[in-house]
Length: 83
Image 1 (cartoon, rainbow, N blue to C red):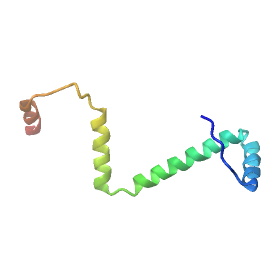
Image 2 (tube, rainbow, N blue to C red; image 1 turned 120 degrees about the vertical axis):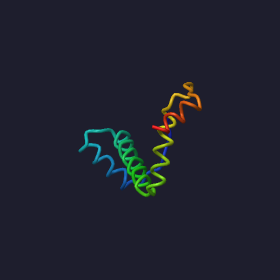
Image 3 (cartoon, helix red, strand yellow; image 1 turned 60 degrees about the horizontal axis):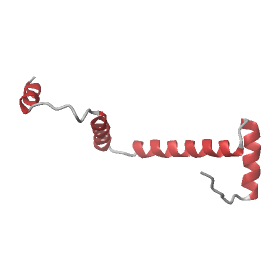
Image 4 (cartoon, rainbow, N blue to C red; image 1 turned 180 degrees about the vertical axis):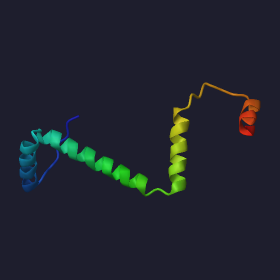
């Protein structure tokens, strides 16, 4: 997907200089910077969660990985809980 964006000349000059030092294209450098920014924000958001919210998120992720076609009987569930 191609998008045109307006960038100030001073910022563009800095991007070009950084791209030379990093041996990347300006586009590649911008993609790398945006990826880093998004990952950092995601980490901050997870760290801001309470312990209970983290447990809920973990449970949700585990539930998404579970095989929903596999079923067990009520008796099997209660037998497992009695252990």
